[in-house]
Image (cartoon, rainbow, N blue to C red; front, side, top):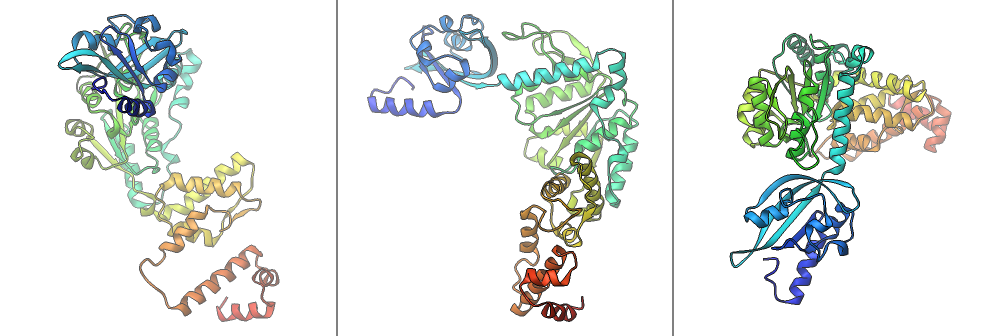
Length: 467
């Protein structure tokens, strides 16, 4: 199809479209000579388009062979290859890691060439390998590092979970009991509710507290890369692969926390289920099975049953993980915790910023209580951090807090209801007077100047408002 176009204009249009796609596209003819190569592919490979077009693939990328090149393999077999991981060196000796989908180009049923769509995962792979290597060094270090490894893995404990909400207290009690065993745990909570805090607390309350705690977010990682991160790689499993342990091996004897489990590709979920069933892992490309003793704690920000229905979570994995299920209530359902959390975050950022903030004003606390907190505890913490960046005094007032919070509270106060004009004017007058007094530190004369009214008028209005 790519080469069936006969009109020059159509070719130019197609070329322009393919050049704007934000992924590398490389096409070769049946002899392996490059016939199309967009600028994204050139940037990815670290070469210029002119160095590739019209030349044989192996002349430009000498580290590849007929056996390891997905483009040449598809020309030979005529079969597409989907999501194949590939590592290779370009002409300048730079190691590139990609995930490729390679398709045959057929004209009248004959193989005319192949086209490859490549997604660059070099930086993601480098970062993940650095993380794995760092974790491996921590877990296999000398005696001093061994004695402190729990400090670098899980720092939170049950006492760090601040609440006086009855529902959340019950969750803490269940979590503390569950910590004594090795059964898998499934945690559900909206974004920002503190899922990892609870997971770390469970680990530190468990007999595994001196063993590794490893956390991995499963979102936005290609299937082939996530598999190697979790299970490790065997030398020769793909070009450039080396013997490397995965997170299961590094977490042996301890706890592996898998966040956003419903984002994990379904094929990796099947392999995870197998590990849960028999405790054995096999490195990518390896033949040897290794026994691991790892407690799995998984978390999701959507209800598990909904994920099963939407087929983002395998039903068999759900039933295997759902031995113990803990559901963290959102902040809007535990408003009584807001004053406790506000005080906690004020003390935290006092220490970080070298400030001496004592509290929030009554008005701010009312606004915080009325606000729905879609970002939950994380959003509340960021609101306090933002406020303390904006102030010099010792009390956080309405002018310091993020603007969207006050606006949201005012907009949602009485949805769908039009108040009488007199009531609105009285409420607005009372609000402005209170804000002026707050800003003036209770000084009536100063507040009157802020409101641009005589002091006697303000005193009369205060008497009328019974203040």
